[in-house]
Length: 176
Image 1 (cartoon, rainbow, N blue to C red):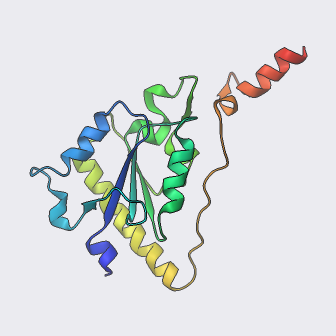
Image 2 (image 1 turned 90 degrees about the vertical axis):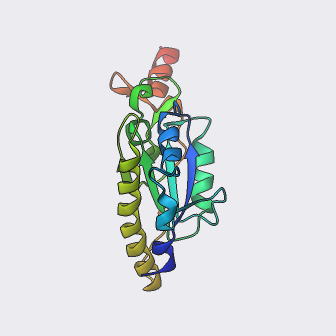
């Protein structure tokens, strides 16, 4: 077992959530749950982090930030989508500027749904993520790990409404 699995460092990013899930992420650090006793440390530097914990949905304003944080992390890395907004877009899915869950921007390894996601579910997702991190570390050592590329740039015009993208509907209106 590597030191990465014994003491994973997590970076948390709030991608425009209502802060319900953020409060639950912070609750994991309180004495009631105390994830630090397992060696889990919250860091602010993506280059030190092993796990990216994301809450909230992706929109045009934050998609580049999410992708930059992901790309700055060293391999192997794991992404955990915490909360229903991070997994699918949640209650904001139908908003004009919401693109969807985090998987619209970067590859996600573990989903922890809930509104707001409970601290126990976050801890379970991190434990599952640690298993995936160990598999990725082993694959990297054997030269078999292929880094996953971030999704191409997506905008609100690419959102599907009534069976077609907003961009296609706008072009149809302007042409004719």
